[in-house]
Structure formats: C-alpha cells, structure tokens
Image 1 (cartoon, rainbow, N blue to C red):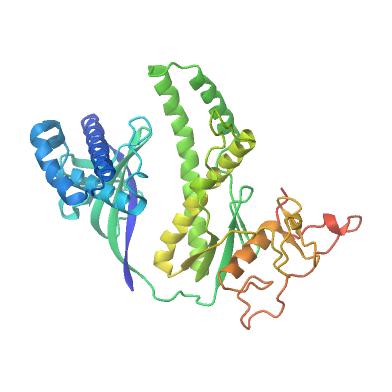
Image 2: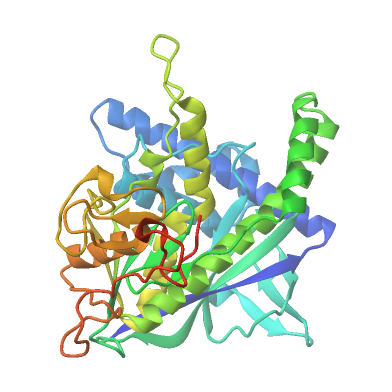
Length: 419
C-alpha cells in the first residue's frame, strides 16, 4: 500500500497589489531558472557537473549583490532550483527548455505546507495565507479534503489559480478490485481513444462558433504590430477561447482515464513519442520538407486529441485503483489482422475499415488495432471484450451481417461510427 497525494485546484481572486506581487514572483523565478540553467550548461561544456546544493548556496550570495531577488520568498526560489535539478536529471541539461517571458506562464510553488493556512469563509469562498502574499481569496469549488503539503500558483490568461497538494489518506491498493480485467486502447486522430471491447471515447473540444471566432482573431493578429497594445488585446482574446478548449480536453482525458482505470486492472497503450511524431516537416532551406501542409494538419490533429495528456491522466488515475499501465511497441498494430495475425498494409482499406486480405476477417480498424495492442501486452482479447479466461465461449467477433441491397464490402458493424 502506497500513500497518494492529491491535487485541489481553485481560481484565485487577487487584489491588484497581490496580482502585481505574483507577477514579480514569477519573473524572479523565471530569471533564477534561466540563470541556473545557463550555469549548468556552461559546466557541462567543460565536462563538470553542477547540482542543487552549490547553486542554492550561490543563490544566498546573489541576494546580497542583487537585492531584488529578496522580493520573492527564499523557499520559493529554492524550490525553483529543485525543479530545475530534477528536470536536468530526468531529461538532460541541454534538453531542458528556457522559460521565455512571451511563452511561459508565470508559476511558482510554496513547498512548506506548515507555513500555509487554509480557511473556508463562506459557501463559495475560501482563503489561504501564503508567505509575503498574506490572505488570498479563492472560489471554494470543492472540499480540500486533507492536510496541505504545498501550494502552486499559476496564471492562465488573466486569471490566477492555486493548486494545493494535499494528503487525503488515500492509498494505492496492491490489487485491483477487478483483477482479471484488461483492455487495449488505440489512440487516433478521428476518435480520441478506442478500446478493444469496441467502445469509442471522443468528444468535440471546440464549437463551430469558436472556430470562426478564432479564425477572425488570427486574421486580426496577423495585421497587428508586434509589441503593440492592440496585439496584446487580441492575444488575450485568443487565449480566452483556447483556454476553454484546453479545459474541455483535460476534462475529457480525466473522465476517460478514470473510467478505464476503474474498470480494468491492466490498460495497454502504444508507446508513442508524441513530441517526435508532431515535429515540423518544413526542413531547411537547403533541404525543404515534403508534404508540409499534410504533415501540419496531422500534427494539429494529434495535438488536438491529447494523446500524451490521456496517458498522463491514466497514470494519475492508476495510483488510486492499482491499475497497471503497459506500453507496447506500436509497430504494425494497425496493419495486423487480429484473427490470423497476417500483416499487410492493404488490410486497412481506410481510416475506419479493416478487412484481412488473407482470411477475410472484418472489423473496425481502430478496434482491431486496440485488440492487437492488448495481445502485445500479453493478454488475449475475446470477441466479447473480456479476457476470455473461462468467461467467454466465442473467441472471435461474429461475422458482420449485410443489409438488403448492400454488398458485404459496404456493411458496417452496428454502433461503430462512420467517418
């Protein structure tokens, strides 16, 4: 049994002075991050290594030379160095990104939970006492439910949010409530997630009106002068729309992950490198890329479906259910027949249709791929979606029935969406 720390996120209602202080704290943390990262890179170029301990000692000396560093709480700056140290150890010093003033949203963490006091002051309001900020109000949208371990402040658009890390007493069970269940999940660009039992998880993230508004705002942005007040105003309006889209995507991924983790002891996914898959195909001046427009559309579709976000949500949900998230090799999962294991690119006629050229087995292409993913994880998928260990007699899905006046090739299984 392992203890699980949970997050509670609320929207802050800051005063003008508090909002200005938060902006200052964010700018100082960004400066500390970039300076410390440059120092680490300089050491690595000389074959040496720099870690958190000497950088924290040098930070104390830098405060005497640069008094503006003392405007932010000391433990907030130390936490920034700890976050950088962890990022460099996990990803490599030269793979960690700079924090740009234009692209990075201000964020900083108060790591000392004993210095944070949280109170509820009404039906819809609460307040928290944070170092150097005093009492800050936030919307009490859900119970806190545990002891506060840390607090992270982040700005998204024109709003500030606080995320409390709380210890609510939950533990990761050693065994799932349904130990003999498993499912394979195929992530796609038409349907966000398709499971091996034939369930399609998807929802639209942006409405037609928001799409038209975004197009008009982007046209206005292209005519704005860089650095102008008008450009900042248009960017704020664009961020307001894209923020709603981002929230819907995160909500969908969290709900889907909770459903999959609650119902299955094993969830199999393809080991996809989303960052590499969505790399630009423009190339260089000497060697320009090919099919750049098509690749751009594919990249946009992959990022819109939130493949990586769904994987992160699954790992987060698995902590409370005891689910095992297994990553398998994605090679040929969409071209392999689940019935006879015949591999042929011609098996997949289109995005949705799959018909084996060897045995004639027909299925939805995404469902067939999800079954192959489950098999690659070491679990056999039956025709009824369970593990098939003494629970289902039929091991293969029934043949697709045809309608009068339609050829067998044009028939589709009931309940499968047509794209």
